Length: 621
Image (cartoon, rainbow, N blue to C red; front, side, top):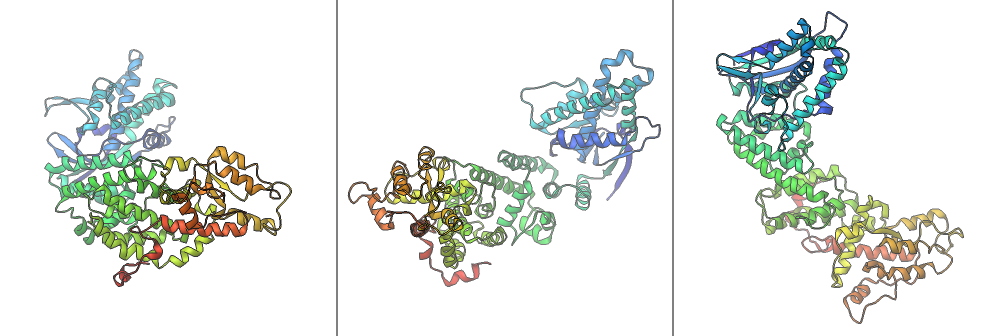
């Protein structure tokens, strides 16, 4: 491998004509992060009053000679930023040109010649840096030749370049030019003569990509996502670069649209665990596994890089769609069960995606929803039992391996029966004990508590043949403590509790909570005198609610004769004449029955699921 490496000052980069090829990543540096850090670092090294300035090393650029140009394999972000800074310097000089001293005029001229000069080999004027990727739309070329030309269809990359240019220009103006043109010129001199970078010239794109990988793998470098992208390019024929770039860009766009653009490694990690890797894979282990013998075989990028890029693109689309559904917190989405997972396992959770990504890339929505419905049920039981993420994650990775490539509901069901269903069936006794002791606050945040009570409300409504309530409606309700949290000053009757601590323990139990519209809740808040007919007065308000579970707290509430509502009431034993610790315990038992009817597995209550002998090896931890 023939490699030449030279340290150059910015001024000496005028020996090159750089070109960023169309398969490279567009400009992504942010004004308030990388650009600002670049300016602050340079400014920290520059001493305005010193004749002997220290040099500032900015990093490396990896290039391959192509005709009279040098194709940039790595370093395009810093090269673009340097070029934007040079444009800003030139444009700051221009208004002062009539009054520039001879020295200042020379620097103005040098900056202009650095930006573009005549290339005898090409027989034309050429910019120092040209961007070939579509997102640039020749913005940088226009800026170099004619100044900024805003366009209504500017891409995200152009907006970042323009923002960087304006930010640098304003910073230079405020820091140096306002002090004086001579001070500004001293900084321009420092920029040209004291900022250094290494230009590494390789003999071919393949060897340049290998250098890129080595530098970034050993140093602070790039993350696994960038290195993985580099591997795809290095494994592909050059005529396939555009295809890979387009698929990679589409993948990135899907993640960005779902608000996950800044967390690409989470997507990559969950996808690998779902489809390619056996067991847990941490983010800092991703690249080591990718380049390992097992990773190479599993991913197949060495022989089929374009095919893998296509798989990544499709997987990112599913991942993004499911993230959007998880965060929806409303009705009307394409994946209602996934949205409910967002309620029971918190909207920021992504653990369920390991299982959902495992299904065949062409699996129908019905298959994804079938699996999601059971993941929702799993998370409900998991939350009550107290199964933590560090247990669930290895379980999910193990189960995902058995779900890989499946797309038919019947096949998914067979795997779930011997894994998820069987695993929870063994924990049924633990679940019942913990549910009967569960508190309202155990399901915090409040949207999850409302979801739990709301899902059981819909089970009641469904059994009674009545229309179900939507997520938006349920999420707008309030949590009513039937035994009030703050009783009136007359105190707590001994018939309810012997001391305040025992009373608050009763108040906090899930059986003491119900959903209620805010207007009605305002009325029942006045029923806090525990020495009077407080519960009877509350019952008079509860029947005004549109929620069947709350209406049934009034023992006299019925609808007609032998109706669905009455059958549900009698079947569950919904009959409360008074409200005390015994009543709360009975309602807690009633809610347990509703929970088993609500979060089911293949439409079966968990206490009716049977464990086959085939399930034993698949149960997991």
